[in-house]
Amino acid sequence: MDVVPNYPAATALQRLENTPREIKYEPHLDSALDYETLNENVKKVQYAVRGELYLRASELQKEGKKIIFTNVGNPHALGQKPLTFPRQVVALCQAPFLLDDPNVGLLFPADAIARAKHYLSLTSGGLGAYSDSRGIPGVRKEVAEFIERRDGYPSDPELIFLTDGASKGVMQILNCIIRGQGDGILVPVPQYPLYSATISLLGGSLVPYYLEESANWGLDIDNLRESVAQARFKGITVRAMVIINPGNPTGQCLSEANLREILNFCYQENLVLLGDEVYQQNIYQDERPFISARKVLMDMGAPISKEVQLVSFHTVSKGYWGECGQRGGYFEMTNLPPQTVDEIYKIASIALSPNVPAQIFMGLMVNPLKPGDISYEQFVRESQGILESLRRRARLMTDGFNSCKNVVCNFTEGAMYSFPQIRLPPKAIEAAKKAGKVPDVFYCLKLLEATGISTVPGSGFGQKEGVFHLRTTILPAEEDMPAIMSSFKKFNDEFMDQYENNWNHSRM
Picture 1 (tube, rainbow, N blue to C red):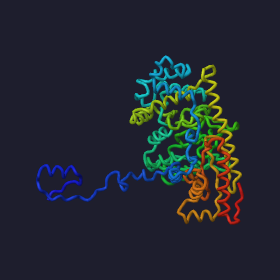
Picture 2: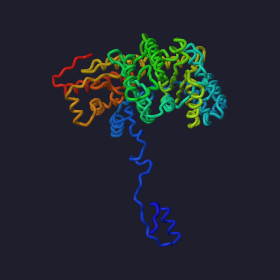
Picture 3: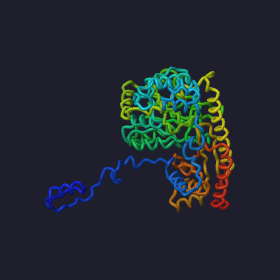
Picture 4: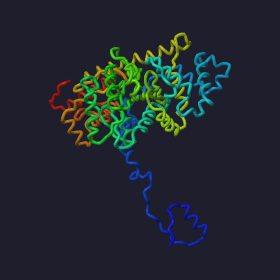
C-alpha cells in the first residue's frame, strides 16, 4: 500500500500512470504558520495603540457610528492640511515630465520647480529607483547640516541613515543591541508601545523606569539606579536606555539638567542612549524648549562627549508636517565604532533602500525655505498656524480634563498627547473585573460606546499598580475640541455618578 501526501497533484499523477492503488492519507502535520507553531516572541507582542479599543472603534464605524480616532498621532486623518510647498516638490518629482511642460510655471512656483530638479539630480533614476541603503547621500548631507545648525556641532552624513519612519530605525538599532532574553533595555513607563513590542519580538527584556506623574512626569535618577539594580539581580544585562523627548504618551519636555543627569548615568553604567526625539518641533510652552541629547552630550565635553554612545531619531510624521503616511525618518549615530556602523549598514541593506519619496520629504523638512524664497511666506503662515493651533488645543484639552470629576491631567508641554489620570471608584473597578476587563480598558470601552471617542487605555503604555489613565491625541480640529471635551465630561461625570455611590476621592 503506497502512502502519498494529501494534495491533488499526487492523485492526478496516479491517474495518469493508470496504476490502481489504495491511497492512505497522512494525518495533518503542523505547518510553520499554524498558530501553535508560530514564533513565541510574536505571540508576546502587545500593541495597544491599535489593539482592542481600535478594533472595536472600527466595528462601530462600519455600523455607521461616527468615530473620533484620537488613539494615534495621525494629524492628516483628523483634518490637518498638508503643507503646500513640500507636496508641490514631491508631486513634480513623482511626475518629472511636468518639468518639461512649458506651462509648468503656471501651476508651480519657481522655487518648487528648482527644488524638484535638485532632488531628482540626487537620485540614480528618479523616485522609482532604489537609493543607497543608507539613503540618498545628498539628503543625508542636508540632515547633517540641519543637525549642525540645531546643535552647534558638526555632524557626519556617513553616520546618518534614512529610514522608513523613525520606528524602522528604532527596530534596526534594537535588533543590533538585543542578543537574547538576558539583555535588558531601560524604557520609560508610561512608554510608547513600539519599545515593549519590539523588545518582545526580539526576545529581549524590558527594564522599566517609572516617570513621576506628580512631578509633571519627571525622571528620577535614583529610580533609574534602582531599576538597573533590580534587573541585574534577576541576571539581566542592561545594555541601553530609551528616552522619549518630548514624551509619548506623557507630553513632558526634559530639561537640560535632566538630560545631563541621564548622560552621566549612561556614562557611569556604560549604556547606549536611544534618543527618541520625533516630537522636537511640537512644543507648547516657552519655559522648557526642546534641547537635543546630542547637543547636551557635546556641551559636556570629554570624556563623556567622546565615550557615551548615542543614537538619535527623527521623522517627518510629527511636528507641523504630520506626514505619517510618507514614512520618512532618520537616525544619527554618535561614538559608535566603525565596525558597528558597518554591521548596521548590512542590516539596512536587507531592505535594499528606504522609500525614496519619503527621503525627499525628509530633505525638505531639514532644509526648509528661507526668507526671500517665493513660497516662504506661505510656508511660514501654514506651519505657524498649525503649531499655534496645537498650542491652543493642548490647553483646551488639559483644562477640559481637569474640569471633570475624578480626572486630573498634567499640561501637555510637548508632543501631541494628553494622558489624564482617571480616578476610578472601587465599584467601577469591581464591574470591570466582572466583565473580564482591565479597569481602564472597561472605562475606555464605555467612553467609546457612549461618545465615539476612541482613546488608548493607560495600561497599554504601562502605569503604576492601581493607577489608571487614558491617552488621547490633541489633534482633533480646534473648532471641534469644545464639543469633544463637553461630550467627554458628560460621559465621565455620569460614569462616576453611576459607580461612585457617594464615594469621593480627593484630587491631586
